[in-house]
Image (cartoon, rainbow, N blue to C red; front, side):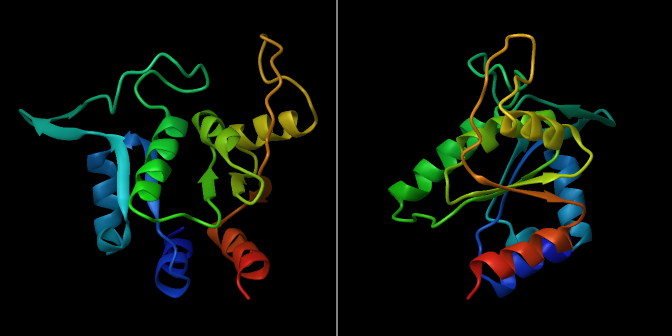
Length: 171
């Protein structure tokens, strides 16, 4: 994944944000280990700090609107708010490439548009859910059918994503 992020950022000039239900301590540690902190445009995650030697993790936000997300973090809302803020700053993206593997990655994937790319990790829950939706099947007992509008790439590793992006979007 670090090779994917390095190539997207440094070679292809993509903006990179992280939206994670993890926490700032974990993500900062990982980014520092790979010397990549300065190449991430923004991180959206649960705040964390040490209190009396214990890691205290707080909620990013409290939400009850999105039934596809956890109450502490709706990745779809965060993505929409980020894109709107960028648009207000005069930055409009040709496409969004969203990479995920968990159940909570479905919400932002459903917000992607036709020119966007949803990269879902093979053999993980998000790929299972996206495949059901692409077959027109419900993902839960509610029976609701959601529409995946974006292109979908099932990936095993970051090299799969990078190869696809280079072949599809780089001229």
